[in-house]
Structures are given as C-alpha cells and as structure tokens.
Image: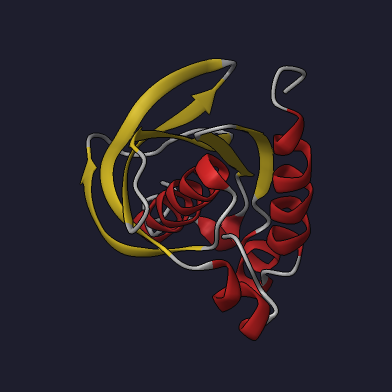
Length: 153
C-alpha cells in the first residue's frame, strides 16, 4: 500500500461499504484483509451457520465467495462492482472453527473482471481446502455508486 497512495482511499471506501451490508453483519463475516486485486473474508463457526451434519452450510461458503470476489474486483480500479456469475465447486465438507475465503483478481477489466476464490476451513489451526470458485464480476461506472449511495462492493 505504501507504493500505491491511491489505494488507501479505495480501501477506506470499501471498508465503509462492507460495514453497511446487512447480510455481512447477519452472518458475522469479517473483512480481514484487502489489497489491490485481493480480498480475504472470514467467519467464525456458529450454530446458525451450520447444516444438519454440523458442517458450515454451503450457502455460507457461496456468500463468502460472492462477497470476496466482488470486493477483490472493486480493489483493482476502485470502481463499484457486482457479481454477474460464479461457478462454485464444493471440494469437501467444511468442518472446523472458522471459514476463510481468499479471492484474487485473475484478469481485471473495465466491464468484467475474472476473479478466483478458494475457501478453507480452519480446524485446530490447520487449514483444509473446502471449495474453489471462478467468478465474473461486472464493473460498474463510478456514477452508479453515487446514485445508489453504495459504491464499490
């Protein structure tokens, strides 16, 4: 970030917008790290986030992928972004104390960015790869965020 003075403003705007996302707050997910072209979101295990076998629900994994890929895309240019599509592969049951999603921009674009994400479950400090995804993120014009009062991610 020290070599990228423009990123501080982008990061500040994204953190503010993520804080206003009701669903992010409902799930209890935390934006733990962002940098230009990447994002990490994590959520602690809670009974409300589990399915009948005690695994993190696939919907929680999908939500983390949806948000992390969009935020990662938004960090590229600082423009508002929305998920257009993603393909999610659930690799193994998400058993553990915490679920972490790490997203990174593969190809930034003016209209569409391609973003990859990997989801890990942490159990006793050990990470297990539980899901992987590829997303197409629609990059919006700056005035869209101004009109909706909810820019970037």
